[in-house]
Image 1 (cartoon, rainbow, N blue to C red):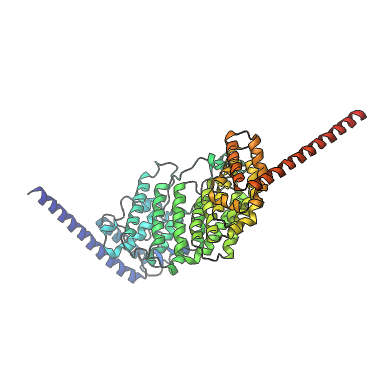
Image 2: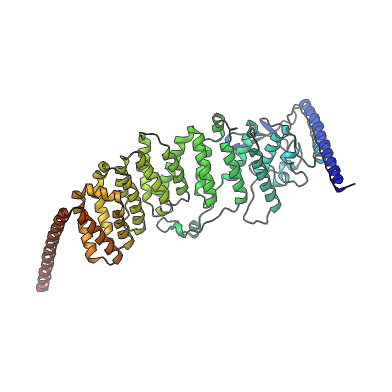
Length: 553
């Protein structure tokens, strides 16, 4: 025979063997179902209860897939012991005939190995990952049995491993990784995958893998937990060692949240406030890959479950409050602000009082922590969104920036000056008039700063045409405020670049209104003469005190 004929013959034999195995499985299942009805038991069903391995009945608990175990009534039928033995023999024969497909129960009734439980009521690792009884692939089982197989695979993926030593349980870790990839592919293949029967299993698997205690940061391990000593830029990023599994679990969770199979009314039973809170706790993870997945998933939850929207906003507020006023340490502030930026963009007009309060009490105080540079770009986007939606909020924003203006941190001053320019570009003349005097007093202080970057950034504000137009409209009030700072810089600033920028700004103001400029110069010179006289009188008083002190001695 040719090579093609031999290959075709081998495929036919494989198909025939597969049909025989499937037929044998069906026959055994029929016998088992008859046995279950005769003994009053319901083995292998995806109903309310699952049979435990040591004569216990495992009842699925509430949200999150928690389970409680209670002793099964061994005397529910007169032939309970015999039925268990028959069940074990038939299940073993079926598993052997089907190549180890555990289609009926992960544990045998009355067997000893079922008493060795693993994590949170799960069977032990030896039972779940028994190499003599591997699970079939989805494509190798009939369609009507895939839901049950899905539940078994979810149970297998609920077991968590220790990744501190990659060499330990390497085979089992790879089996779990491949199984996670398989169930992600399975839910991608079509609709109807997320049925009511498997939702409890799904939430349990997600809770087991995701909701964990985060490891301490490197600063906590070294004892530098004080916020004054904490510098996030010097922190060594610690990547999650279990990421090969976690990444696939997050992919599964994302598809679970966006799936059309999840009815919003029923889905909120499983994706509830407790679930959202535990997701928010994970934003403090040091692994940026995990925070990126969390950002996407939480935003999808916010968009799909409208009932949770106020709760999510308040929970994020609470995280900000604790960060601002207590710890000043959190790894996920930037990601949370990205979510809020999208949320704020969807706010309806007029803005609610709740949203205005959020701006005043949560967003603006975020300029206070020392590590504001880690999330400043996202914070600026959120703040400017408020001003774009309601220009009247510019007054609130500018006064908030002045309130939290840094005194000794020059890098924060540079950042806030850049933010101030973006806010001023969105500010209308009426709102600008309300805050221009205190604002330009602060800008004048920055112009005279001995830190050249601060002075340079403050002078760059005059390169913005819109800001120059605002100044021109209110020049009679603003030029006297900032004239002295410009004259002082032009005369004696140590940095030549700052001196050159100051001369350019000074020339611009002089061309804007020469008469007003001359009046301000005369007034400034008079003030300088008065200050010189006051200084001379002060020195004379000190000299007199010194002479009196010398005479009395």
